[in-house]
Length: 279
Image (tube, rainbow, N blue to C red):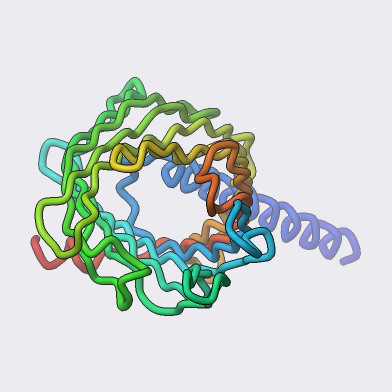
């Protein structure tokens, strides 16, 4: 009887280890898919972004701000294996420092920012070559003029990259011009997202995904050094990607601009109810 009990316990432990191994494998597979910009998985990412600022304006270095950036991703699978990607991004500004020229000091502004989204045709080959091209646009949805451009802008985007079991490399440039809206300020903005991510296993990802931009209207670069660390886990049969990133801006506006940005991100994988409507 004692031997049977020991055997049963050993079998239970072995089955538990198999279950953990299968879950880790699944987390690894999902982590790799989520590291791919052309992922077929639908998710809802919430980025909690805290910024500190610096500049030549009075009290610029004592300013901080918080933004919750909501970024869903809804891929639509095509019969040929390619995807149509729709990825909106809505900033919810809780504390944005805005300079008041009359008071020569900063005031806090809260509300919604401009809604941006892209629509792209994306493919990932069997060899791991990633490509995508499409349009990116920004709508003037800001609740206050100081939280948005007041312009509807649109332009092209393209992505090229490579994904393997251990790394993801690539570039994702785009450009937008204003086509409608109000105010005298025009929009002509080039952005490029570079990504280099290492997948060491266990659902982890480590890398750098900086987003740099150049404002052609004001001749101003915005360039960060970026480091990200994340882990994909499975809770109650739902995959979640938990990550943190740090940005230090080596190039920004001399008058006032973000110097540091720290973000804590959470992204559950969800059922793509939007894609189901078109089946």
